[in-house]
Image (cartoon, rainbow, N blue to C red; front, top):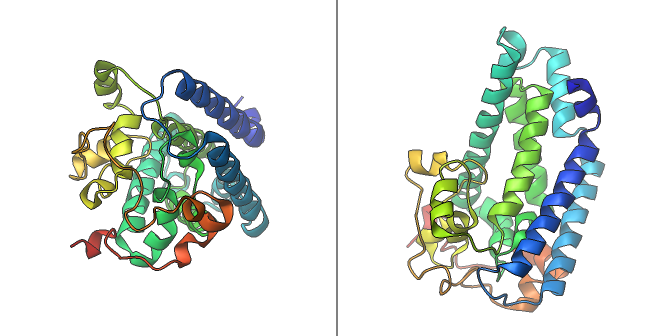
Length: 278
């Protein structure tokens, strides 16, 4: 069964992507948290386009998928779990959690290093916050993220099944926690003990610098609490908070495909990187 799942990883990941995207889109239509600034058709067209472009670039430039790298590490005996005899279920569970922690650290790094922030601000420059924000990343960031993921998989010797589970979870929770959806307060309080919720992650997309540099988790919510980067609610409240970046407010620059691709090359105030805050 495990071998069949791994051999059909592309179909599994694409099916989960399409299913979660559709479910979140329907939820956003029925129970939106905030009105959108930019027309939905413009957002979806440009964000799906950059997501498709990223997939093509990764396929063309990188030698293997994350799961392929896990299989290569296994064949070569690289990494912790390929060198030491650990029960398979434990290796899978630890690998999923460790890879999530690696993504948390990577996210902080992209906020701390000004050059990397130039790439990551493509994600933050979105004037709205909806499910498609979760797939809006610059191709250069996607490539760097994949290389970091390769390194984490090799160091861990993560089983291929763990990598597949992690890839599906990361993709699904990224779309979920960027959803423009309304959750009952009590349900949100319960859910954010086990997964990053939309209300938790929306704080991270605030125009306020101290809020942008909080709530870095994508999937598991524990790291922000453990390392002091957790902020419960935006100061202005979810309905009144401003989404995006202060210096990038032109819709034609930040919401069209050409502008999105050019965003890393625009000059900025350098207010947002963690080590440049004023």
